[in-house]
Length: 298
Ligand SMILES: [Zn+2]
Image (cartoon, rainbow, N blue to C red; front, top):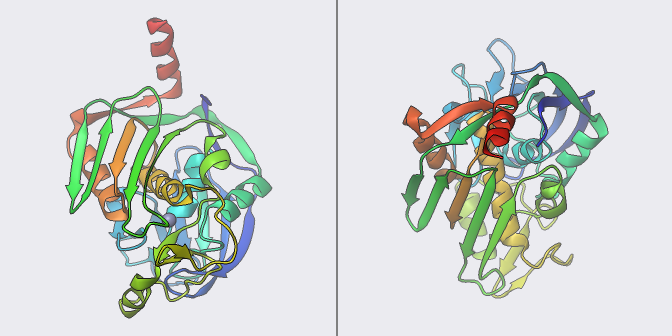
């Protein structure tokens, strides 16, 4: 386990269109001091506070994406794939400038965000990393979805999906978080949808920027994309990626086992709210304290 907090070495910039808004935006990730966490800035807005800390208390929309908003009304959407890259690559502190209301979709996965972090370089900082350690089981249900967090020695995510379209079908994935597992197992898994849902999503103002370049689209037991699946179980891996990104809205990394069936952004946010609803559910520990505890057990 890495002991110190990490930021990035220098800035990195890309541009791309949002999955839902279709807006072309420029995104820059920048280094941030210890204990900053992840803070977004709307670089296109003036006259209001444009800083939006990535925290569950700021979540404003969980329909088909995760959006956050500050008290001045500055909002940023579809943050989950970048948050997953920060969580997966162990970045504790970063500033993110975005010139519009939604992050770029890129190819529908976290790969481009991982490239930005790799290009910027990872920089170890002076202070110990802090974690939220789950002490008691917490469980939430929403429609057919069920999610729990239970105590564990590290961050684990067990994900189950069950779709009626046979191309997606039922599958499960067990993710054990370590330094390399995100990039090796999850980061390239793309978002997906059913073709039959596209017109309804667009009528509701979502997926306007969606295309076969940034999402897998499934229709009647086949995918419409010409490029093949990147993993045979790409769908459940992407859902696991989303869970990792959404759990990073705890503000710190979680030490616990998330078990989830039919997850989505709404139940992910409800799970974090349930965790924080009772202070006896968790404890904030530093990496040094964790190492001391492990030595005592050994
Ligand atoms: Zn996603």
